Amino acid sequence: IDHRIYRFAFDDASRGVAHWELCRHSCVPYALSWGEAVCAAGTDQTVCFYDKDGSVLQRFDYSRDETEKEFTCAAFNPSGETVVVGSFNRFRIFALAPDGSWRDAGLKQIENLYT
Image 1 (tube, one colour):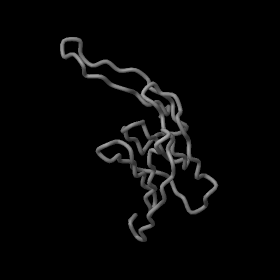
Image 2: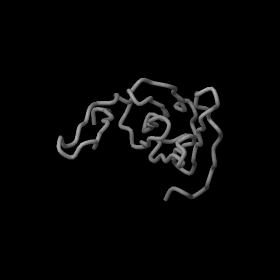
Image 3: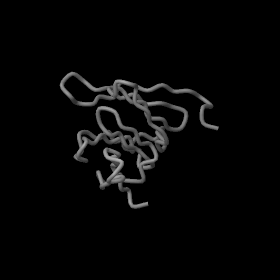
Image 4: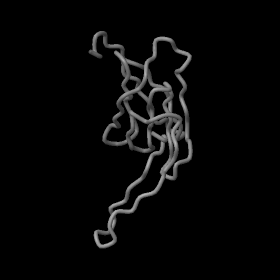
């Protein structure tokens, strides 16, 4: 409810689980996944990438796009260099560029996907 994203570490069974606040997202991050970066998105129609320490790497704001709805799911590919973020009837694809920045690689519209 307070928009926090926590990072957990399970390094040593004798010490138990370590956790700490990674960052605070702009809304509740319903879509959350970790690859080469942490990708978080939600009801504010913003997709944000954070580094492993919680600093903002890049932000994509779709709140002015009247056809975009809230983001509800996200998943990285196995290499962590591409992430798909889902919303109402569409998927947005983001890819890691050679210079280390994230780019919007397009979207796939699928009518009647969200029921």
